Image (tube, rainbow, N blue to C red):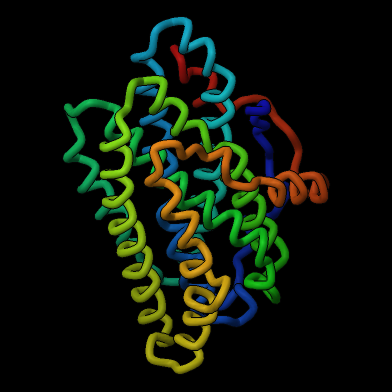
Length: 281
């Protein structure tokens, strides 16, 4: 894996944005808002899972993965901060995050268990975010008409998810994680992630009075179920995770490299975040 760069995104997230910020499309706005609500809790869970398992590895393995872990934690901590700022505006619009409390309650069940379970959940969710990131970079038209700063935010996040998609997976393998447990957790994550995403999206639409509009579900069908849509277009990538020889590097990351190269003016490179600096201590 190439060195992971921690970037400071050069966008203004202090200024409020419109309720239908995604080109006036109610479904895509509610859908992206739902995703963002999950990120602060989710990113912290991933950071903790990676840090906890890294601490169990032999010293030579810790040294082998030190740079990847620092880069992963730095990027995820930055995502957490950016989406927390974004979510503050959603809260001011009256939207309520019901996803994070549900997820937090579920994750309490992992307390006292083998830390590789949390890492398997992290690796599974990272595959979902990598699939989503690759799809969004390949279909940036979904963000046509969106506020430029928010369009940049989502494409930057997608590019970085593809960059660090293999870190949790590689650590799970290095820690002796089994294939049966990896796939078992992937099935569970599929049900939980998609179920929570749609529940939160529906709640957002209901709050905005857009749930029963024909245009809302026409947009949903186009984005999710059309040929090349988010769900239908990722069926093969989803199935690939069950193969014994699967590795995230098999997934194309060229669009991530291209976007980061073409959009250097949108960010600056920084040192590892404080969370990363203490990851292996």
